[in-house]
Image 1 (cartoon, rainbow, N blue to C red):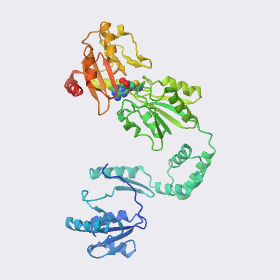
Image 2 (image 1 turned 90 degrees about the vertical axis):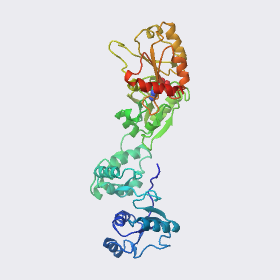
Image 3 (image 1 turned 45 degrees about the vertical axis):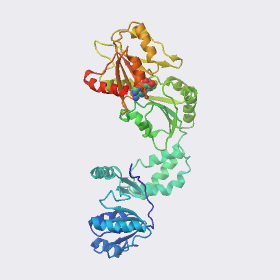
Image 4 (image 1 turned 180 degrees about the horizontal axis):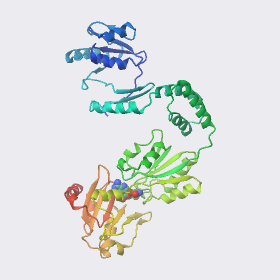
Length: 460
Ligand code: SAH
C-alpha cells in the first residue's frame, strides 16, 4: 500500500487551490463539501468559481500564484492543467509548508484524492493508486446503488442517540442493536428517531443471549476455498480461536471487532494444551460470546473435535459444525487426480503419521497391497517409519508416493517420488510448511513436467 487512506479534519483549516478551469472546478465541487476555508488563486477563474466567491463560499485571489499564498495551508492543489505552471505553483506551496497534490500527476503528488461515495457523515473513499481509475468509477457506481441515499440521515440521527444506547452493555449487545437499526431503510428523521426508540426498548427487554460455538473448517489455505457458512461465521463471531495452520489471509476476513486468539497448535503439536483450549472455548461462550473455533481443513479430520464438543456439552453450550475442505481434497486436486478411481481403488484411507503417543500404527499389511491409496496427514516426520513398515509388509518399492506441501496456497510444492525413494527425498526437499503424503498416487501425467520442475526446486 503506497498510499495510506485517512480522513482528515479540515474544519476551519486552510486549503488553497491554484487554477480556474475544468480541473479546478471538479476538485472544488468536492472540497466545497468539506468545512475547510477555501482559497482559489487564479487569474482567469471560471464564472462558477467567481459566483462561489461572491456567495462567500471561498476566497478568490484573482492573479497568478505568488510565494506565501499557501502559508498555513493544510492542503494545496495545483489544478492549472499546465505542467509548467503546476510545477511552479507546487514548488511555491512546498516552500510554504503545505501538502501538495497535482491534478493528474501522481508521481509529483504527496497525496491523492479518492473517488468518494458521500452519505455524510458516512463517506466511502475509493483509491487505486492511479492503477485503475475506471475500476474506481465502477466500484463507486455500484456502491452508489447499494447504499441507500438515506444512510447519512440514519447515521446522523443514530449519532445523536448514542448516549441512550449506553443503557445496553458494551460489546455484542450494543453491536446487535446498531446492526438491527441499519437493517431498515428509513426515509425521514422522525421515522429514524421512532425506530431507534422502539428498537432500544426491544433490545433492553430481550432475554439474555446465550453464547454458542461454531466449530468451523477454514479449508487448506486458499481463502476462496472457504464455505459461505464459514465466511458468514467469521463475519459474525465475537471470538475466534484459531490453529496455527489457519492461513493469515483467512483471519483477515474476521470482523474487525472480533477477538482473535491463537491456539498455537499445528496438528497434534502441544503448544497450548487441549484442556486449555477447551477451557478457553467454554469460558468465552459462557460469557455470551459467539465463539468460532477455527481449524485448518475440515474440523472433523484429525482435529480433536470430539474433545471440544464434549467440553461444550459438559457445560450445556450449543455447538455446531461447519465442515471445510480437507487438505487431502485440495491436495489431489493439485495433482489432477481422484481420491478414488474405478478399477484402481474403491476405498481411500485418511491416516495420520503421528498421534499423541508418537508414530501411529496402522494395518500395514492392507496398506501394502497394490492399488491402495492413502492420504497421510502429519506424515513428514514419520515418513521413514511408514516407508519401513510398508516395505517390510511387502509393498512394491516402485509404488508412487507424492508429497504436497502448502496445498492450495501460493507456496504450494509437489514432490513426486516412489516408496523406496520417499526417504531421503523428503528430508532433502526440506519442506517447512504443512505437507500431506499420498501413498499410491502420482501427479497426472499431464502435470508431470511441472512436477519435475517442482521436484528439482524442492531438492535445491
Ligand atoms: N483438519 C485438517 C488436518 C489437521 S492435521 C484437514 O482437514 O486438512 C494437520 C495436518 O494436515 C498437517 O500436518 C498436514 O499433513 C495437513 N495439512 C493441513 N493443511 C495442509 C495444506 N495446506 N497442505 C498440505 N497439508 C496440509
